[in-house]
Length: 184
Image 1 (cartoon, one colour):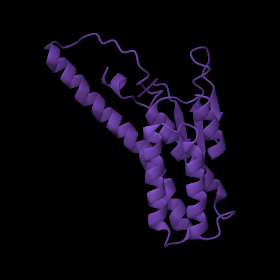
Image 2 (cartoon, helix red, strand yellow; image 1 turned 90 degrees about the vertical axis):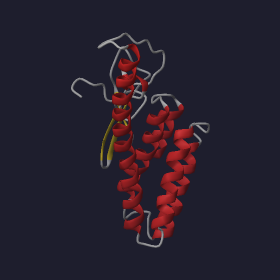
Image 3 (cartoon, rainbow, N blue to C red; image 1 turned 120 degrees about the horizontal axis):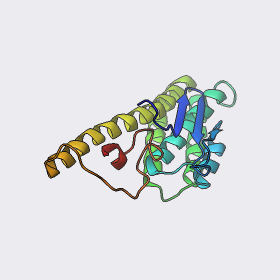
Image 4 (tube, rainbow, N blue to C red; image 1 turned 30 degrees about the horizontal axis):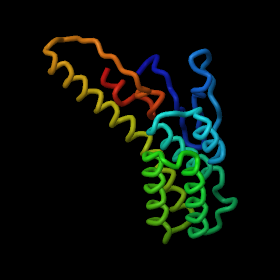
């Protein structure tokens, strides 16, 4: 969507987050090079919104795995252990965040499922799963927006209406489109 504010900018091996503490006066992006940087961004509320927090954690792990490949990860069991420890650490940034826990559980399951393979199998499985979370969030938010918009228009029986929302449910709170604000 042209002109849309991007809170999460990701390409394999690189993650940048819009520092929401600087808004609305400045749009400053911070580099998230590893799980520790993501932990700080989540804890300090530089990233907000349940979906955005979960995706930040997942993508930070993906970035760290891409940079760690061939270094500390010598076999599949050590890769699974590394991943589980990083995910457990990320949960401590916001222990009550349901979306974060769901993302952690999903990535742990992928790591466990690929553990019988090589280090590369484990890393690729987790990285691809984290990247899929990003795409799935964008797709589900767009679909939710289409359904919700049509439902609102059908309910009022007019071609347009005004909607007031008081919650961070837009592109800042998700992977980039928004939940309730996506409807608007």
